[in-house]
Image (tube, rainbow, N blue to C red; front, side):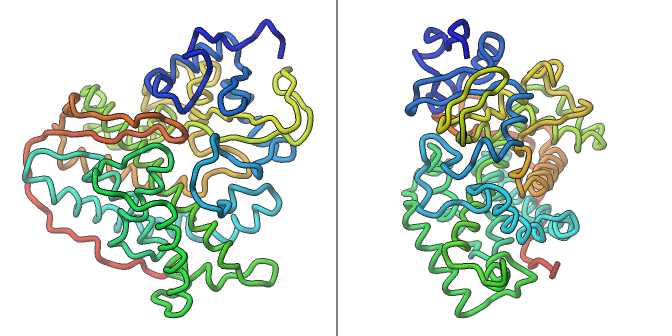
Length: 418
């Protein structure tokens, strides 16, 4: 990288810092400025890292696991999750494929198709709690409990403990989760998870075909069963990925639709646009805004020299708003074609739960637009996450709407065997 392309310290609080509140308020503008002036730049935050803002550079690095490794850590600063490395995202191919392959049965389309009615019923159950009042908080009343209960339901964790499991994950990335009561620490939740795995090992409640935990207790890799630490690491990845990102994508999307009633009406009048709308919201929001890799050798990106051991930020959010790939990137276009967004990553670590997010988002949008079509966001009560960090989160989205009747639907049926 030449001296003619430095990061301008005047552009952002003397240094680029993706955890700073100022960044959360100006993410797109800051990335646009960097991409135009210095698409591959360095910052001294967190002992220094390289920031990639062009789509082509982000994708190239994400696909090159040999040169840019996940194993030294995929976040900055190191998030206080646990001592367990998340599997399989925390290791490199080909080893990561062994873990990825055993998990795919729970993310294939046919298995998720069986879960879609449960998702729809659970959304109706949540909306029933507020539908007669004419007011709600779409984060507290819907998106947070939906994403948390889904992952609890699928894995076989006790659904009544969804708050205890989800809040520490959200808090670990600088969020409060929309609830003021005392949150369990990550250490407490880790022990809770460990004890639950031990309990299900001793006294199985589900078959291996029904839920993730009993499956992990039986499945083998290289002719051996998984260790307790491996099961913990896999479960923590599922919890970390399952609770917050889709919740954030839905919250921002509901905000957008309220602020753009013509677009909301367009979706109501044209349900066939919903699949495209989900993809466009995923691109536009980019809920997981970045992950990191570490250079395994001296190399270069787009002509810029990178030293062995340097951290490289794959700014998914910047890539998704690159005008060279997405014309009019800051506009939401439900009919956008060739929407090759990287909201789920790309390459060997493509998000396992990408279809889960699509199922949850499509069902939530359909149900809210059917049952609360005239909802309006109370802008004074909207609360963004204090700092974006890894997830582009929203704490509160209060709404008002014309009250309606309850459905009486309960999502109490267990998943059929896959």
